[in-house]
Image (cartoon, rainbow, N blue to C red):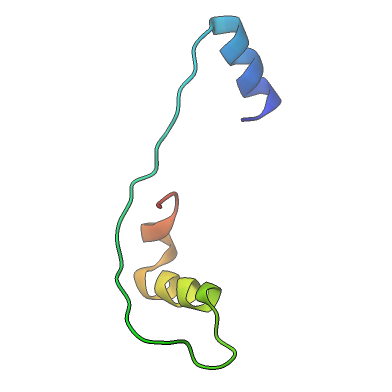
Length: 57
């Protein structure tokens, strides 16, 4: 939350949260030498497209 969000929350005594949608992807196998989990994440994002993974968990 930014400073404006905090000020509004204090002034109104209300707060709101947006919970990200989740999805599950199962993968098998091992990484080749020099490959890391971040590489898998980037590959999956490339396959699904950025629009489908923004604000998702």
